[in-house]
Image (cartoon, rainbow, N blue to C red; front, side):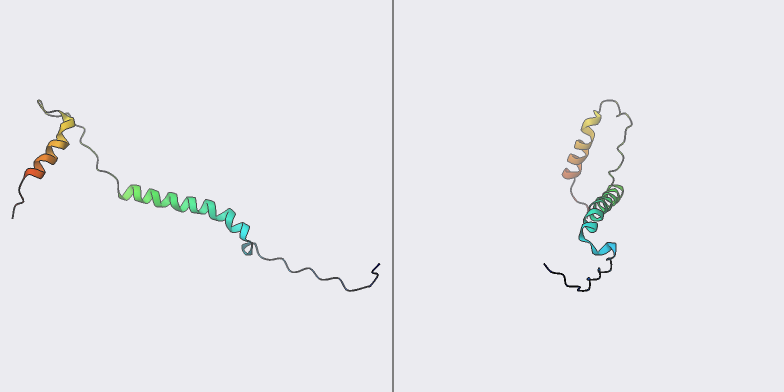
Length: 81
């Protein structure tokens, strides 16, 4: 049996919260999601597609064919100097 009267070790001072790795795992996940959401919103707003013309097509033209016809005509038109 050890009955020595050695002085007790003093407890270390508590560390600040940012020194623990688990705290950064808990904060890092949601923070990454928020940053990715903001980046996605910026990309969506800056790269928004143009609004399509919803007016009815003139008589004799099918509206679904209009973009294809415009593309064909644009590709067939020679470049002007």
